[in-house]
Image (cartoon, rainbow, N blue to C red):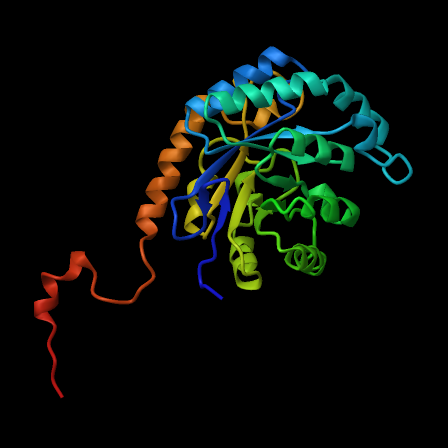
Length: 287
């Protein structure tokens, strides 16, 4: 198997032999406003996001009231922030019309079917759904690339999901994630990126829930091929993920820092580099 596997999302390659890519997680930061959704799409695309990610769901199907004591509260919030199917289609059509690459996290089988009708190019499995094997099987049946957040999930559980995807012939990308919103810099545990790279033969990335721009270039240095961060045009909004989301200016800065980190990391071939060629004449060889 190739040392540096790659996955193509639409025609964009993701892997260690390629510049790191950025996913702007719009999610439900539109708070149910169609106009805000369009604003977020435009701002993320215009400031350099390689991919835009939405969330496609029916709020009543998103949480299990039988097992989750917080279900009622979150269903209530998400129902306020849920776009109609007609609005969501308009958002997708607009995103594609400006050249954006857009995909989504689905949380129920009907939403997968709807996303397929929109021409979804890939799917994201949220950390909360990695053990939802019914959903995994349904998503894998699309044969589209699948991005998986690992937060809260053991290597054993993740391996079970990977086995399902490989049997279906699905390409996949694993994201190191700490599933808390937000986290501090020192809770990032970026060494987990190394572990995922050692354990699985796929591109690995990082879904970052810290505030600001510091962690993404460090994650790239740790071996991430793709970075996801929540995105906003108004961090003063207190609902949903706005307080720890990055702004358009921060997105632009992150893209610069990620590419800089990628260039600094360079090659792992142990050989005389171009920068060393002049000084290589001074190597003393005696036997």
